Amino acid sequence: MHVFLSPHLDDVPLSCGGLVHRLTHDGETVIILTAMAGDPPTPLPQSPLIAELHQRWQLGDNPMVGRRAEDECAAQRLGARAMHLPIPDCIYRTVGTKALYTDADALFGNISPADRAHWNLLSAPLPVEDVISCLYAPLGVGHHVDHQIIRDWGLALTDTHPNLPVYFYEEYPYNRNQEAVVAALDFHPNTMSPEIIMIDADEIDAKLEAIACYQSQISTFWSSITELRHDLIHTMQRIGSSQPVERYWRIADTHQLETRKN
Image 1: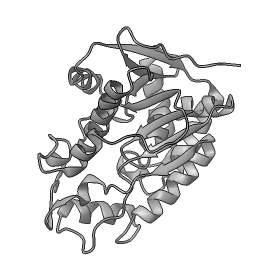
Image 2 (image 1 turned 30 degrees about the vertical axis):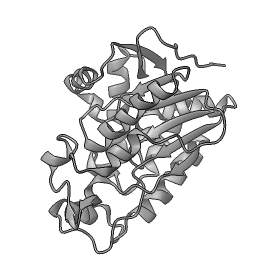
Image 3 (image 1 turned 90 degrees about the vertical axis):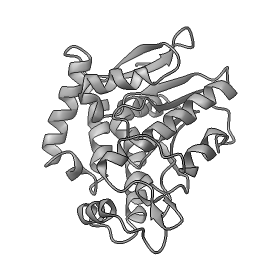
Image 4 (image 1 turned 180 degrees about the vertical axis):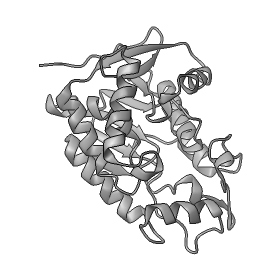
């Protein structure tokens, strides 16, 4: 069983959709485990960021219901199973009634020392009962606080599960900026080695169809699905020197990622 840790309800299909589709097509069990999938508090914290995002998403005062449905759709398209933890997105997390992250600078800044989600996850076990053959976590490209938290969880799991292969995926679309990738690698305490996974046309189509399930999120980065397709393929080709790829990172001198290709 392969477990992909996702900060938000879209990160794994955006970043790893090709590999997920390949694994499930080859008969592997894949779980996409999204940590920040919980409902927002009631009443909502007073935050201009929440107001802006709710207006953009058009999913009401509790957009997580619709976003979880989008995630189920995407996972089904990739042949994977969606699993959701009850941690609220960082825009909803509070100290008392005050939001911890209220603007873009905070969203892409450092994790608040008062953010209980960070400390709770650092010691959290994986909530799956079956034997895990491989774990995937975000690299932290873009420095979003939720991505940093799940990156740190992945690093903690490498310590508590020394025999478990753990790979870190580059988060699209933040990996359009190579400097952001380099900055993310600098945050890791160990030397990282890249693993390049060639992605074929069927896997690209499955990845795009899965991403298209997140209708509420497309406008955050793209004006249309057509623009998304062009940008995604261009980014994958740039990383692969003309061949579409997904790039993963592992701690040097540890397990090497193996994927079957029929």
